[in-house]
Amino acid sequence: MVQSKKQKYLFLSICLVPPIILFCIFSLYPLFSGFYYSFFDWSGASSSKTFIGIKNYIRLFEDPIIPKTIWHDYFLVVTKVIGIMILAAFFAVVLTQLKIKEAPFYRIIFFFPNIMSVVVIGVLWMFIYNPDIGIINSGLKLMGLDNLARPWLGDEKWALPSLVLPAVWAGIGLFMLMLMGGISNVSESIYEAAKIDGASEWRQFWNITVPLVWEQIKTSILYIAITTLNGSFIIVQIMTQGGPNNSTHVMGSYLYEQAFVQFNFGYGATIGVMIMILSLVTVFILQFILRREKIEY
Image 1 (cartoon, rainbow, N blue to C red):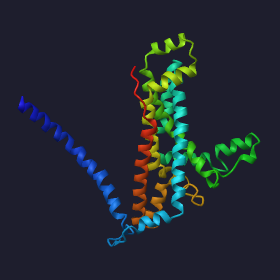
Image 2: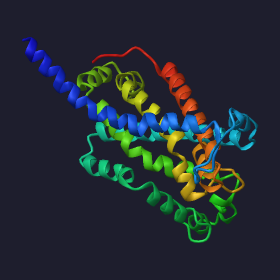
Image 3: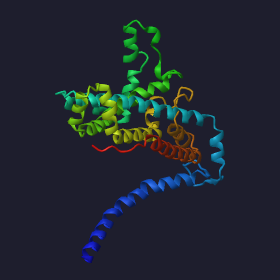
Image 4: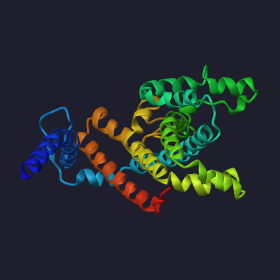
């Protein structure tokens, strides 16, 4: 018996060693390296670096672009959460509750953007937003609304909101499937009892569906927030490069510009530390706001 337990623990230890090593190499090491480099003046391209203490952090608080990047990031977080969750919940309910025969086909259609490269999505939407041949401006002109046509990605006022649409479009499918999985596990008898009691479709959704799939909703919101704060720079780099006039710079794209364009690698690492801290704070706040008693069914 003792030998069996030892063999079990040995087997578990052997299984855990590779993922722990990979986690240390690809997560912990870059994390601590970034924090270390944030105390240096380093171009990232040479072997010489100068220790400057907290000067990069002082520069961070004095940089007028940093507050803009933080605002842009949280603007994208809020708009993506609202847009994706509303549309994902709507389509999830429609495809599960209305018993549509073509539901499997629509699942594939909605999920298709999730298997596309972010680069492909960015280039595709650049063509859509093109002021001369883009679908949006062409459609507006066709309807006689020429005054509404504009260079969407070149307009300081509309460039950042224009990034929301491709992000929402690309994210609906994944979270729709997550919600559909939760809704499919809810017993039909619960909805039938609600219908007998005279509950409307909206009341059934709000009082039955939402509470019973709250864990999926919570997970989706957290995932959208984290991936936006840490990954929105990709679509920004592809579509606007932070322009025009820094109107679309997010923390990640500004980090990229400082570290790999202007070769201020130490300052870029400092921005990375700020992203990590803000991401952790955001997760803790959302966990607190979204916590509620788990309902079993």
